[in-house]
Image 1 (tube, rainbow, N blue to C red):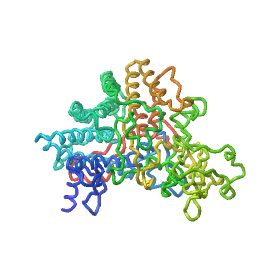
Image 2 (cartoon, helix red, strand yellow):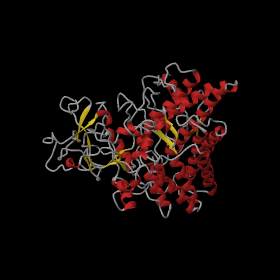
Image 3 (spheres, rainbow, N blue to C red):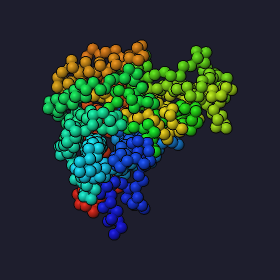
Image 4 (cartoon, one colour):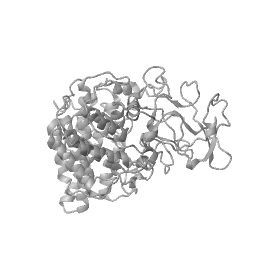
Length: 580
């Protein structure tokens, strides 16, 4: 009897998670959109739904699932000691996922929980809106848009959406065109009435236009997830219409410094359209997109000794070579999006011949702890940063607040050089899985406003920005045969990154689908788009480092077995995706 009640709770909340839990209580985060624990009722109603995005997009949930399944990232069993986690990252990268894969189930759990929170908010707000409360109506429109956004994530990864209006009824599980129609109806129902100026931390009219553009851009894949996409002129015209709407508002502009998009105070960056607001308003903000990839002995915030990396995923050599092949020279010299040097090493210290952490005690320079800034973008070769002694304290220069900057010592695994030297080659072999292997992605700044650089951050997580809008319009134009229009949009994005003129990408002279796919990779790398791009451009069945599986069934992830088991008393409620 208890089990039947549990199943009903799971279904009514969408929280189709691990069977066998001992408690029916869900941990509800005490988020507030105002930063106050006594937020007024409407704000307090929508805050848990917005705040849950942080955990939906956590590195070991939906973000990791998108990243590791693509050709841009790989996470080996580091040194045979770290990041095995039951083999879930290895299987995800190799497209050998099973319905029991924990990365799939944790992603599903957090996403469906997020959807359930939008439904709960809608239930509270709808009667208030119907009673004439305009503020409740505005919040209601945002929750409908957020539900559509989350359902689109479910459609993109599992090929299904949950149609549900009330928590006391079962969801309708929709697929293909029915799923597209439902998401579209939600978005169209609010696009003309939702607020226009509460972004980027809240859904606005421009964000809804952006979602509609994404929906039409991917509609051919969603209609036939296992076949060859048929991109219709009607869909592409809609992409152009909605992206035109956003661009023509004049509210957004491309950021001259690319990495400002991912820095402290990025909330006010005029390129952002929708983002997870982390300006001290969440009790569980996070910096995982900043620290997951970088070396475990890199300490980006010497004023906060607990902030470090995890030696997690690296960029595959395949993805790195797309940059090399595009420019025929060092990408760091040719494209400001690839790399930004912040740590300037004195020339007399650059030669490490004959040195190791055993004999380099005088091989350092000094900076104020609050002024140290690690390099950004794609990190290669020797890394420099603060170093700790055996007592766990940073080596200092004598003056208060001044720390020594050394070549970073490899403190994990076996590295004969003694230093963190990131190499291009990274794979699942014994040599390729060492802690130092693989170039690393450092797009997000470690927040300076946080007392703990790993668990807290005031850097907004970027979910939609103007560059993506231009690139969607470029793709729609290109698929409609307007090569000149597509080229102009791509070059608008490339040449806008001109804060460092010597690294501003030169305009392209020609465009085709392969070049556009490459350009999306350069602009949007490690933001969660690559897997979907590979599917849409017909490249997901290709071979890359440690991945040879070409089964089209792997375009969609399996529905977690725990979810299917949890709904087994409702015949046919959840049916496993084909190929699993």
